[in-house]
Amino acid sequence: MVNSLSPSLRRIVVLGTGGTIAGRAADGGDNIGYTAGQVEVADLLGGIGAPEGLELSAEQVAQLDSKDMEFDVWLQLARRCAFWLAEADVAGVVITHGTDTIEETAFFLQTVLAPGKPVVLTCAMRPASSLSPDGPQNVRDAIAVAATPAAQGVTVVCAGAIHSALDVQKVHTYRPDAFASGDAGPVGYVEEGSVRRLRDWPQSPVGKSRKFFETKDGAAAHWPRVEIVTSHAGVSGAVVDLLLQERTAVGAEPIRGLVLAATGNGTVHHALEAAALRAQDAGVAVLRATRCASGRILPRPDDRLRDAGALTPVKARIALMLELFETPA
Ligand code: ASP
Image (cartoon, rainbow, N blue to C red; front, side, top):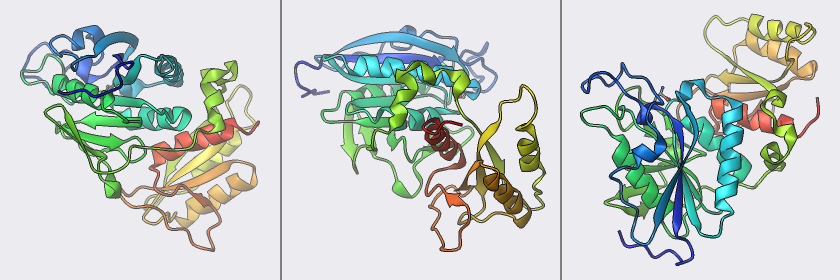
């Protein structure tokens, strides 16, 4: 690959967090019965050459199945990204990650860092021990994106596509091409080490939530509790009412935010809506996010509960947590 980055940008840093990409099964033909997070990130780079004129360095930040992702890993990742991106010779950061929550980590990092250099998350649907693993090509493609001049923001690279952290969603349980960007479509594609870009790199304003990882207040224990409750046929307001009752229980972390995974254009079953309004009146921040895979909620003048626009429920939850972090309880 021809690299025309500024000569001062010489390094790509690869941070490992585990996932299927670092997973191992007893049998090479087994693509589901594996244990995630077994192979060191430095070993995932074996056989993947650095683009011309660049060097790769690896750092293990965590080693877990991303279904078990925790806030303290996000904090650690944000801190390590901020550290490496501030180094004058670092062109970009690549993060190896499990597919299950990669869209949440990507959205979190884009929201708190809004990096001017590329942070590229990548993953695999098949373990490292597979007869035909998809991880090595994904890592190679992610490095190519991180080495692309003027690339910026947080992206997810999988199966040759580059997705913005703001739009990406896991949409398939098994296929290697498991991600989509809804209406927005991918940012571009990686073809034989070259990026074919279709639209702008992700950009978002750096919120005050940057404090989240820069100060001690960002300690995981202090993250505001935000729960997701789904609206569906036959739902009641019982879960929301229980969450409200818990606010007075000794030792319980009181709920501060509620995301309603709403139907269609942000509609909510009347029983759940009544409970959500009770919660809102009691001081809980309530946000409606659509369950639909694509599209955004178009607001109506008579809406009594705020909407999260195009954000999925899991991303709306992160946005609300960061918003509440700014607002003392
Ligand atoms: N459970 C795995 C993880 O998210 C799935 C994967 O990486 O594909 O870590």
